[in-house]
Image 1 (cartoon, helix red, strand yellow):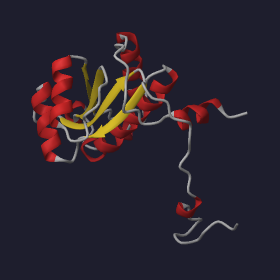
Image 2: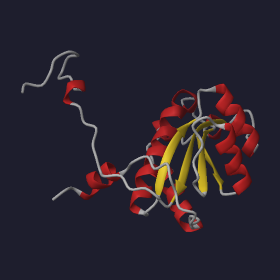
Image 3: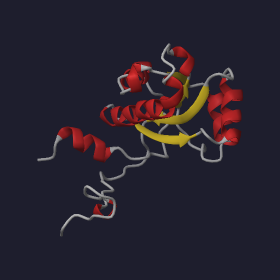
Amino acid sequence: MMNPTLDTIFRRRSIRKYTEQPVEPEKLDLLLQAAMAAPSAMNCKPWEFVVVTDPEKLAQFRKRLIFGNRNAPAAILVCGNPSLSTNPAARLFWEQDCSAAVENMLIAAVNLGLGTVWVGVHPVKEFERVVREVVGLPRHVTPLALVYVGYPAEEKPPRTQYDPGRVHLETYGQKKAK
């Protein structure tokens, strides 16, 4: 029998087609709780989130972001704001911290019956500009990723993309014996 945690991770797939069913606010809140349970370097927690369900704002993302043409009824913008922390290390690791928050959301969504897709924003300045305009982000907050959320209108089988050829033992270039 599969380990339930690994099963959830393997079932996490990028979903690009959604039903019209709105995502309940309680489920969006659970995704945010999962995101904020992510590890953070020196506990800096430099993240902020913008939940978007306004059809006009979602239409702007679909129209103006080259990889953002998804029909999801909700999106969560994950942003870095290192000024939230008194620890100067927040400036150094905000991208890793916010990425961990994104991954927690993506995995949590599987167990809530939701589908998600991660759309990268940072470091593409044009994508950042579009997102800033749509949601009114201040300059000191950097949009890292847009996560579309909805009920899946497509089904994908669980998978791992494990490739032993990318694993090195002890020293780079040292491969596992077959």
